[in-house]
Structure formats: C-alpha cells, structure tokens
Image (cartoon, rainbow, N blue to C red):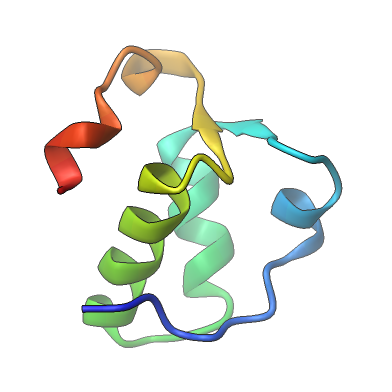
Length: 67
C-alpha cells in the first residue's frame, strides 16, 4: 500500500533526513489524518525510504522489516 500524499509537517520537513522518535513521527502524521491505515502506511514509507531516521528506543530498528 503506498503512503498517502500528506504535506509532511515542519518537524519532519525541516531537515534533509531528520532523526525523530517513533512517537514524534506518529503524532506528526496523526495531526494530518485520523485513518490508522494511512498512519501506518506513511510511517512505513518514511522509514523504508530513508526520509526519516528513528532515534530513542527504536533507533536500531531495521527498516527492512517493513518490506
């Protein structure tokens, strides 16, 4: 399922490849949509494409697990 066409919030768009916590990423996407499927698809896309990197507890999580 492709990610939805959200305008990525300033938190994510402000840097080339920002490091955010999983909570920050999910909250930013939830500000744009209330559909859980869209949230999951967008998180998956941002992580697997390398557009964001996680920091904090999930920083060593392998994005390949999303594929």
